[in-house]
Length: 366
View 1 (cartoon, one colour):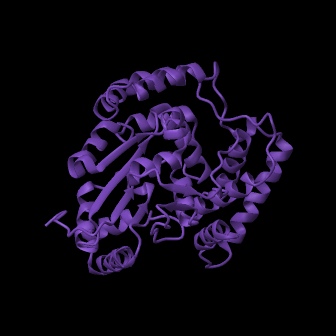
View 2 (cartoon, rainbow, N blue to C red):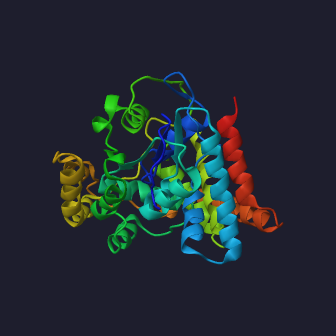
């Protein structure tokens, strides 16, 4: 039986499903580093980074792709379920923005099949970023991790062909599955409780104001336009490497760039006004539907479309590295990229594992 009854235990499981580009890394780092105390105890967070492995395990377990794959997914889900059930804490958290596109029914089956009656209450929480901001941040992310060598305009045009940013239907499916236990919050600083993502997450997700946050470096800084173009140039030289290698390489370079001193005139990527206007027109109905269904009719996402137009650049910002670096400097960047490519290709070493381990070790370094 899906989402069957559980015996009361006073315990609560909160499942954070994203969205992408809504500060998920900040939330995950805070809980992974045990920087959050709720009602005097550290919540159970059974991973050193995040739970983005969960969607593929759920798919393999409940869609079926062969006995071997299913056995692996069962092992992953069993271990996670056991860790959650064994915790002595009142509050537990699973967090993975990759859950954004997971069918709600699969997550409900995991809860029933692998946590049993361990929790008295299970909630699902998601944040939603206004459409134009999500597109701008999404473009920067896929550029950083080597998934895109196109322009911002081409990226937005491609996204408009699909339904990924048509929020209303997707979030309604989560509400249909979990009812009042599904919480949607706007990723708009002025709309967050205390204008703090972590405060908002704890108060609305766990339902308490009795918490303490230990300050930490969350390694989640946005890149300047020039740093983004540097990564784009480097990624162009390792484009034949496996996707996981390119992704983890980009994140590690970005992490190290974030530790370097920034300058006062660091330019950020901006959307040009014609693009912002077309985005506002394309997503206006979806923004209105979400505002009406989830935010009591307050036009949060609708107003954000207007704000994006006002903040837009009057002209198109080039996303070609050649327009941001002198030819002599770009030559050196390409040479370094070719060197990285040669090093990565030279052995059978799992570089994605090395890069990921470095990120985790840096996060937990005292």
